[in-house]
Image (cartoon, rainbow, N blue to C red; front, side, top):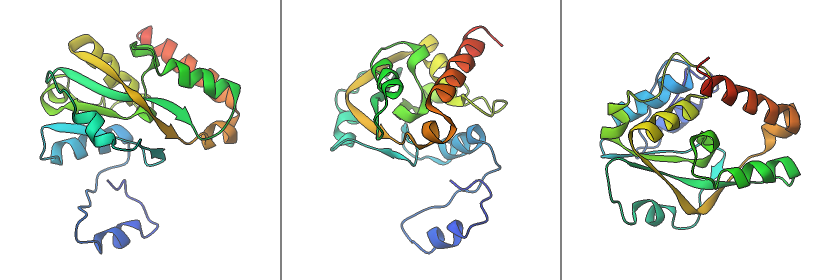
Length: 178
């Protein structure tokens, strides 16, 4: 998915015959919805570029698919060692909407995704949290036993506690209906 980049990425990727480039307007929710609209399979899998998937992740995702109304994600670990990030990682193991986010990946059936109108394009942040909240209201959520490893770079660039506080404030605002 390209969001109007200007760094030559599209030209490089278009030279790879087995890769399809989808171009969309800027905005993660817009881009993710466009990717979902173009997907040909019945299950959608969203993963951040800076996330490392566990060995045989595909087998874990596809094992025991019970219901089109069940979404799945992995729990989370960070590639950097910090107490606050360890607490966030522990929270990702709890099966509650408050603890969901895009860094954990998301597998959802296309029918459920469409039934809940996908990602809300009016939001520039927390679109993944909002989508997961809708999934919890209309379906089931399963946290898989393995963890992904995601980058803690932004936490350290912006300050770990400051970034965590920002995440908490955003969640409070969303769950308060703001």
